Length: 313
Image (cartoon, rainbow, N blue to C red; front, side):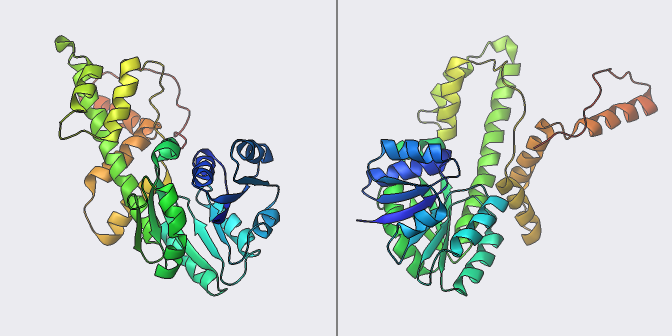
């Protein structure tokens, strides 16, 4: 029976534990909130609730496979250090966070010096992964990825689809980073297009009907359009939704990579800038523009609430 240690049972990690369990894998699961671990273990026959990292690692037969599904950055960095101290030469550590690929390259080198294999896996699929499977992009040595392949086949939509050995260490998270940059651009294009149609009030356009129409046979059909059609069917005005769009590290890293390589990526970069604008980060600049316009042309300015500083996020 395949077995794996899984640290991190959030929205994606928890469903990955469930999918692995239902695929016949024994999962030694650990989460900082033990109540979450206990709940999943009560639901899934092949999930063992572990109260500590030590218990998770000790519950696995050597050579071990341990997968981390934690937020990128400091949480993953700290977890890798803690878990690596419990592993032995010949074990395999997997980072499933949407982290920065240069961090993955550094970690692979450090773990290799200790005889521990490392694979970085970019994971896409969100909350729908349990039912539909995940898209998995793996980076690392061929032997390490081959060892991980049985688990990737279970997590993917099909054993021979939806997962890929993308290349050496860092390649998995690099490909996922570009994936998310493309995602930013696609989302921005849909948002702008539907905003233009909503503004053309003289036509009285039914946005939900248009979204549903485009899902069938059009060039722009996609899962993002499917999701858009679903929520527009319920509410086209979206008046209760704050116009604030968070950004994650991948969009920023993609824009920085474009600068570093000197490769033009205006759509992805501008989509990231629009997210910054939604967070209030353009408010001060817009106030300056209003005052400059007043200064040279005597144009009126509108008064408004005092600024609360730059936006957060």
